Image 1 (tube, rainbow, N blue to C red):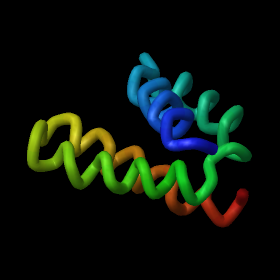
Image 2 (cartoon, rainbow, N blue to C red):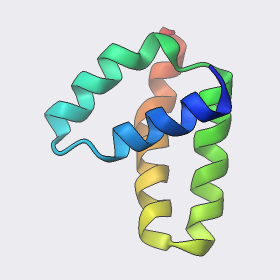
Image 3 (cartoon, one colour):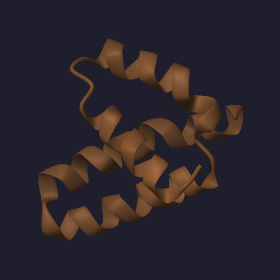
Image 4 (cartoon, one colour):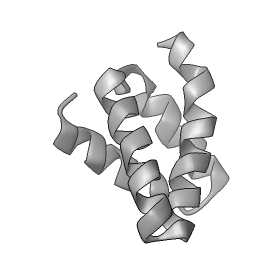
Length: 73
C-alpha cells in the first residue's frame, strides 16, 4: 500500500456513518492494511492531536481499534 492509498483508506474509515459500516469497511480492507497503512495512521493521529484534537482523537480511536487486528493480517 502506498501512502496515498493509506490516506484514502483512513479517510474512508473516518467517514463511516455507523459502527456497522466501519466494521464492514474494516472487514473488506483488513488484508490491505500493511505496515505503511499503520505508519500513516499513527503519524496522522500524532499530527492531528496537536492541530485538531477532535480529529486526532478519532484517529487514535481508529488506531486502537485496528492495531489488535493487525496480527490477523
